[in-house]
Length: 167
Image (cartoon, rainbow, N blue to C red):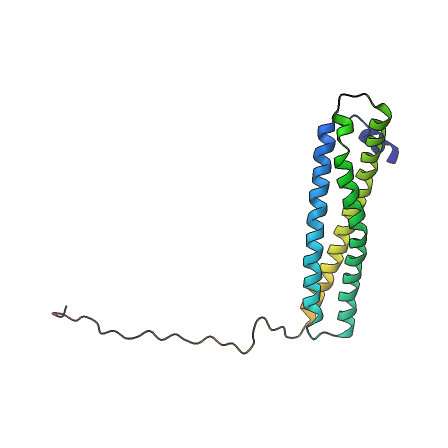
């Protein structure tokens, strides 16, 4: 079955299609890089709240998974950028069959590697959010904002109403 999938993928992709696919990859990877920064800040906000040791370990596991994923992200991001820059090989009018073949082979390899990366990252996020949700549900009292702040009624100044005959 795996050979069938590979055979389908190896059918001709136009250089424009490979370029669009590479741009999507780069965009998704850049988004993930920003998202990981956000997730680290979110995790940090959980770490400063009073939580139990078990819950702290759950947060720490999520943080480690993100850190490991970040180590994988940067080389992949650089490889996709390099791949995008080498697209000229496919677009120039020079017949460079070996270089074109190598470019397609690299594209196919990136395709598989990125699909695995995106799947792994999605799994990390799902598991991490499940852990954070569990912690939120099990936290007895979670104060949002300043717990000492109280709303007070704003009194409107009383203005005399104009009566009948007064204007």
